[in-house]
Image (cartoon, rainbow, N blue to C red; front, side, top):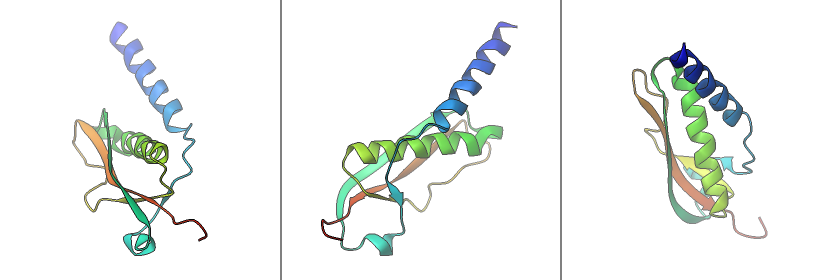
Length: 104
């Protein structure tokens, strides 16, 4: 019973976190940010992959976008291998943060 309660609380917290992003960072393709300033790599990992891979990846992506936003990024380019993974014990979203030049 105690394990079930912990599991339910974990899922509800994950769901609420996944629905409350405040990031204003746009996901872009590399072609769209050629003239932008690169701010560096960003990575975020969340446990609980497996059957919940899409939800967990979404939470990791929200976290990565928020980290990029705190760096001053306007755009985020996902790494080629950044995607949900079946049978993983955690999900990781990674990419590069970019800042759009002023006046664009």
